[in-house]
Image (cartoon, rainbow, N blue to C red; front, top):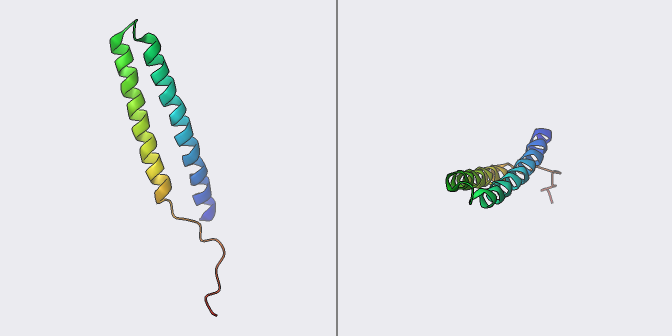
Length: 77
């Protein structure tokens, strides 16, 4: 179970970072194409906002992930 938890933690970190990169790329392109098409720029900004919301949900999932039990502590004395 700890292996699955660790793999998921790594995946969540990766997905959060990856989404952040896409979000920034969408915003950059929205700025670049604004003079070409305000509608395209607006849609790219909306996509970036939704990508940020997805990242927020992934961060919540990461925080909710149970911690590894680690070593058992001796509670007897």
